[in-house]
View 1 (tube, one colour):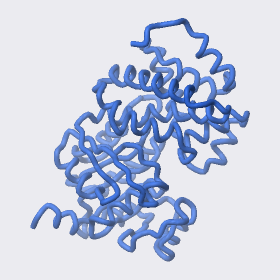
View 2 (cartoon, rainbow, N blue to C red):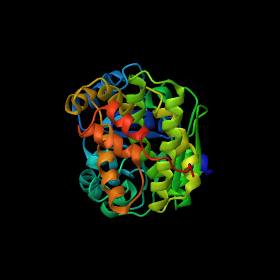
View 3 (cartoon, rainbow, N blue to C red):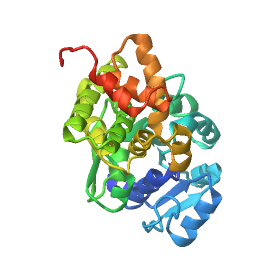
Length: 342
């Protein structure tokens, strides 16, 4: 049996039935025998199984018949029936540890886990791979991240991502399971950099949405992206990442995509803040997780403690906590002392 045959005969679990989780399940369905999609909402699961669409998250996408939506963790993992070879973890960072504890008893330990969460654990500042390694009975863990707006990938538009891990078999699993003629998967070993790049860009996406809502042009966006990237590198390297990772798909690539598209939830949060809407109302109406709101608070606190200069993050923190409005935050950033670029 060739490697390709092995993956085509394998079963994959996707934990998380939001828009990105469903898209990842769709990609996996092109390369695997069966995809088990875990969702919290039984009505949503039934809708997918009976109509082949997700009316809440991707109403215009026809979901592959290979994808079976489920709400019981034991059915998703089904170790007694041969289990799954690979688990793709696509849940918000806020529930990562609690849900990992729920799923842990149903793992055999032989699975490969690839998480797709662009966030960190509040308080501990731990990356999701660290959280999963502490709670799940296995070692082979990786991350998938990049400029991957779910709706565009669902439409079949060309896109690329990166799978990072210290385990070759995790990278192989990610590339074999997720690669399609329209979705290219690159490999990397810098998990720290890929995870922090995907996390930090959410903060900058909030700032980008706010600038666009104010009617700012390309000069302002270019300034935000380049100086924001400098902050990402500064913080990431302090956390043990390699600086070149931030120039790749997970860093600059994702930053460009989310800082210019209303498909980004964090971008929409920033735009609404610029219009004077309160953060509570914004998050309530969003209907999905905007990781950048929580991340801005956690990262800002850590940066202040460690003396890491992150003025844009500080400005976004002021916005999401109501300490300042967009115009004042922008004026404060522009009035900072003149410094060297590098």
